[in-house]
Length: 230
Image: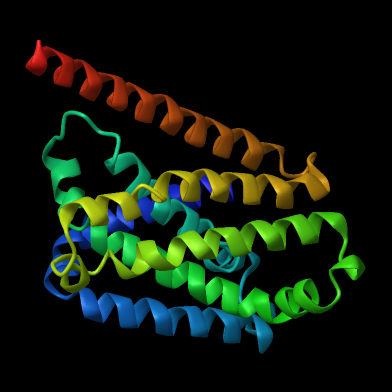
């Protein structure tokens, strides 16, 4: 239930802050970066032992376990497959690039924290790593290779200096990146399928629905192009 709760909280957060993000994106980028550091300190210094369990389970774990980060990219994903926008989706669509940047900053921070442990071993002694961690770390490197150009080109100042064709070509990497996140999560969950069954079902439904909607949008676009050239 904390996974579903975390996703709901993330979506509500962006709905409530969309206007503020649009006006002051830099403040949110900095705030998210500082918050990531605070979360690391919170757990490393043992503050999680001093707060109620419900606070850690339903709030802090959203950030330490990457739920907020993954849900942030879910918002970006689903905004990209909507064919008929309403007032709410248009509001979020106006800051889709900024939300993507926030998700990228969260992901990069997450990888700095965990990469200190896993990446040196991956490059120096991969045979010593358990198979699941080796696969997960390798997938992470692939995700980072896609994320960095997506992250950089999400800034409007960078986008304005690029041709529309080049920008769109780079942004197409978002599709394998989104699916790669799902694969990465499933690899991690494979360590204990029974205790993660809810997460497996929820993520599979969300990503499965995304694939269906993305294919539907592509089919509708193809039909319009054929009708226009007929």
